[in-house]
Image (cartoon, rainbow, N blue to C red; front, side, top):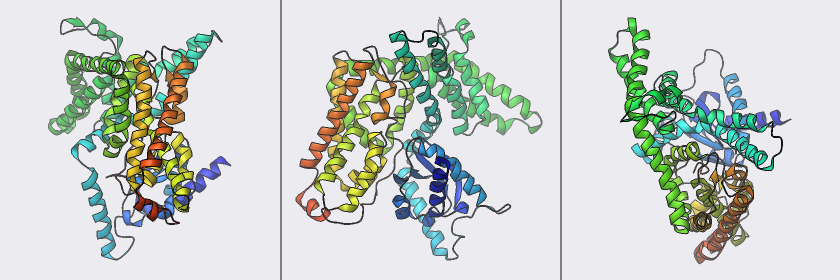
Length: 496
């Protein structure tokens, strides 16, 4: 029955995005079905938003993204891919922009829309951060699974239950993290146009135990030194070396020379330079994050929690992904994520206030009712793009709620209750199983729950009393169509 439901969702989406021939590529992340389109003008946005399974739609320079929520998207995507393949007759190439309709104006309109979208969102910084995020996003399911297993293992270890199982769970939880540099190297080479396995081979040097015998900068290297940042740099260097070889090495010996030179040159630079430098940077990041929350306390939490939603809107939050991964690799958890997750709590509180303040706007209230469950679980896009951001002031008051929740968690951290998340990706209530810290699971859960409650209450109060002008209340407090999301999209706010 579940498979039928997922296939029905995929079947409902497909004609609304222009059919199989309008799709050039399909992928998914934690919450979104991401598709690349030939002709943007063939998409029916309003009909897509009206589908029960669709939580929202957003768009960036390269992909059209349909928010389905965690779990659902991983099940709908294979069904969608299957329908797309079935819908393309053998031998028929995908339709190019404008050819589905003979009028040249439609083709020009589609091209203009795509170009406008790229001009608005494709700044060099955002494009670079998006590519860095693309390296780490595929790793998130393994981070979540291993993080939850690590948390379960910690509970068994502390309670003394099932002692024979504890070593097995420790191995399962730690195996991926011990080799995460290899996966980062593989994905980096893939993302930047190199041979993925060569990127993984160079990055594997970082975790190889034999590097402990190598002396660099007057000291012996440590296996894992430099971590994911070193792997990222090493694989990127490998891509550059490989591309240079492809240009100059004759085709007759390319299969032998290019891989050898790529691994050798990049490997030597990694061992005698990148591992040391990336290790210093990683150590500095960990020390700064610890100092920031231990010393900054409430103020640091207020700033982080209050500014995270604007960072999401600008696409700059993607720079935090390697930082989170580095902290998890170093300490077993990232202390920044619970603080940043408070932004989602402020967003939920603001949405509830909008619901109460506009009792006669049935369409907007319907949007809020459908998006709130996902919001509580940390999927904030439907509420951001469908409610608070188009209204304007409620987006600001949502940030106030996030700042208050972040200040609460930051203050508790300064008082000695330090904890974090063992994985990135989830947020909101979905983050509870991933919390970890030296103070014990009970206290960690209580502090995080308290931060969420503060975020909900302050976000609600700030929006209820300051989120609307009299004119806004007069114009909006009537039955009307849902407010369209006009802001540029962002990747998962949960990826704080």
